[in-house]
Image (cartoon, rainbow over all chains, first blue to last red; front, side, top):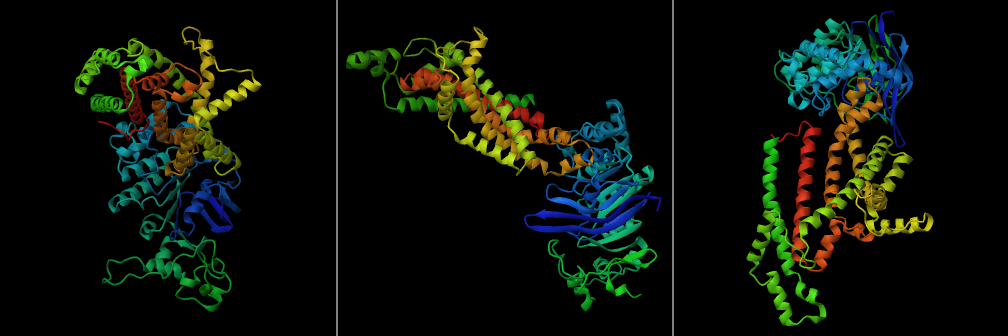
Length: 324
Length: 314
């Protein structure tokens, strides 16, 4: 796979809190190709955000730690990279936007100051050049009065506008990979569509790859090429976006899809997956989804299943497909 | 902004009026009579009456108040009943000492508290942090007079230091002046540093957990820039509140420390005035201190709006 931009292999990120070990990410493998959009889907606590922070090298210290595995970016190993070298990659080759646009910008610095910061740091631009570039970027993300916006402060902008600023900031150094952690979750529905549209636009213009973290399958359908479904710190299913909606294999994926309201159906009670995500310091011995699974078999509670390739482009972690 | 400052200055009037009325009433209620204090054992009722007449103490209260306050409006704080000297020049003279001592102490306290507070926050829950917190707790809990006495004791035992006799102004002999003020400033500075350090630590810690810090880290800028640019600018705002209050208090005179080091500051003047029931001195100095206090508060409020663009007074 020469065109792989990011290769995550057997990533394990644990948190050590008092005497407990919380296995937030427990053996995750995936690859992102150049220009590809990969979505990680899962409930809160499934480990999807920690996976993205692991790639950025921003796992909350001092409790969290990548204990095993490798993250290769353009062939270079990121795990264990010294902070200084990591800082050359962060914000430059890999950029990230976050869930909470309302609090993700520093309230005491102007928009211009915050956008030019990465430019000045990574690209050795002069102040005037960086400022010019910031105005361009703001125009690109849809600000008509960009020249004024750079002098304004975050509190003068709405949530949607702030997320646009975050995108402008993330794209400032032309990153090869954009990690978007629930970029639309905190926004109004109408603004959500605009922001997704903008991300697709930006991706095309900059020819970058996107790792999209979300729990919203609607967003996945809009944006993604490939989908990873995460549950309990592991990938339980991985396939193309078409496959996931047409032929979901893992009972958890089916459950997630069934819990989306469908407009053409008559109104009835929404499907739901019973129970909650097990806490990451105390997983069941067998399949981590077994306690909530509608198709649970005796062997599911005995030993954990592996992620198996059941079709050329479809992997699933479930005993139901072991023989097929 | 200018309308805001004007409005605030206008609000000084009711505050300061309240202060003058309160002090005036208190001075009249507390027992003790300047005439008997001045005349001492030789006091006869006739002599006392004569002195009271002279000071205008037999007039109705509102008239006494009016006589005093109408003078204040034109910059005449009256004369000390005790020494007969005009109050305003003496007050300003003493204030220059208190002011210098306050600034000196504040700089010492910032130089200790802010770096230590940041260090404790960054190294939270390590031995260093626990050590810094312990020291700051000592700073908060050891009273000024104890620390002052202890310092004098230790310094005189081991370093041949003795508390200076006689004060020399900065303009007369800067070196000697700083020598005299150094130890009192250290005493005041370290006791201010305790609470300031704790505030800095908790404020930085709170800011470091904010989303925008993660955004800054995600940009790839150095940890130093994240700390000193993004975190500090936000964290300094609550710290400024404490600094403002501390400076306000100190400018109002540091009675105990001035007493211990026999410095002729504003606090000493208030204390002597109260002991001698010297009405005009007490009223004048308290009014002066109150004015300084509200002015410092105003300056802090103005600084807020420069540090935090979300705070706007327009």
